[in-house]
Image 1 (cartoon, helix red, strand yellow):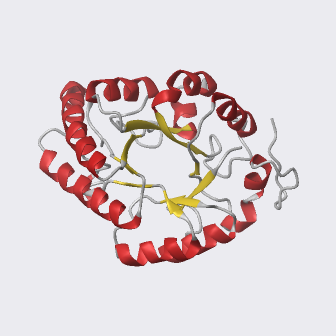
Image 2: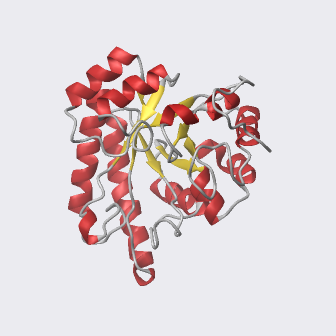
Length: 270
């Protein structure tokens, strides 16, 4: 039976961050994840999680200078110390709130810098993974499609697997975002089967709209069935952009959780 977490960077965003946790719990989510919650004091976040009896799965390292085009620093040669600071921030905050994983963002690089970027990312991840292991935190790598984020360093599942092999740390895993992978490569079930052992988290959203996972070209009922058959023990993160109010679009959650009577008007279709 799949277990779903709510990505509070996209869901329940009409509320302040800590209130989103309460709303997610009321909707039936037992776990949440966030992108960059650092503006909220860790003590406030921890209290909200404890009160709602919800687990925080993961958060992202800071992007760097977003105004200058940064979207992560991990693979950027010459900015190793800045990346280390973002890792330290994420691990400190994550440990304080009981998070289980940190997504280390690679960043945007030019094609001519790709080889140097890979060497930098591998080196940076070795240090990040060693620090994360001391806090029993998993490091996640997420391939992101180039349609949404042109020139993002990490875009393919096989590339992430190669990076993990080079890093050589058992706490470094793939965050398998079905939305990004379907756009870039497709063949989701084959890749889930091939890389199951190094998949630490799965995320879902409709393709191509990135709305609720009850429309588009990916049959998430089938994806969940495949994950069950494979024995996947992790969570499935709902990282989508709601068509309207989050609560009004949660029929997919009831449908994919085994309830055949969704509360919204949309059903999951093949």
